Image 1 (spheres, rainbow, N blue to C red):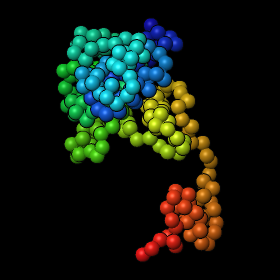
Image 2 (spheres, rainbow, N blue to C red):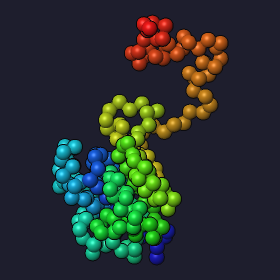
Image 3 (tube, rainbow, N blue to C red):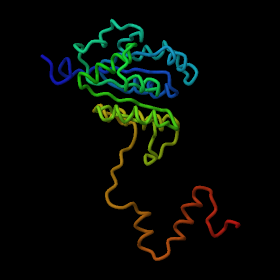
Image 4 (spheres, rainbow, N blue to C red):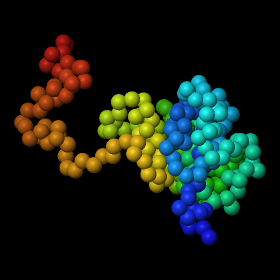
Length: 229
């Protein structure tokens, strides 16, 4: 008996797809952090990008998943709507693949699995890294968003005060995990109530220039009063 989209009580299944966009580290970090049964599909271009951008090999990444499927294998289990899993994450997701998904093209295992997610109403997250974006890219993303797809750009927030590249990666991956309901501790969540102290201080004084100058100096930029015209 199935409970929602979970195939076995207390066990979750995820499909993780890595496509040929820069940002392979996001997919690797997700594989490292995500708990549950993981099905991995890596496109041919992504296989070449992994060793170019990270200290990992394709074989290393495969070892982080429970099942590894070839993108050319349209007979694989995840190509069928009768195969149950909880969510699919395409990370990183190239805009070329976004275009295929938006047009309903299903000629690879990754694009076929996305098509299955759409028709079965399953949770689908696309971690898109491309920037800037053309009108065509934006229209494709909008079309998918209207179908219930989560378009999650690889844009980290800075309120957790990241100190390393791994911190930045963790913020993006953590936000991705939030979208599929997976627990994590990859970044400190925003929990402040009321106005930040800087805003209260600024609004409570008639002349905020001193505060503004102080904040700018902290960033290594001279205050306006010290700049030459």
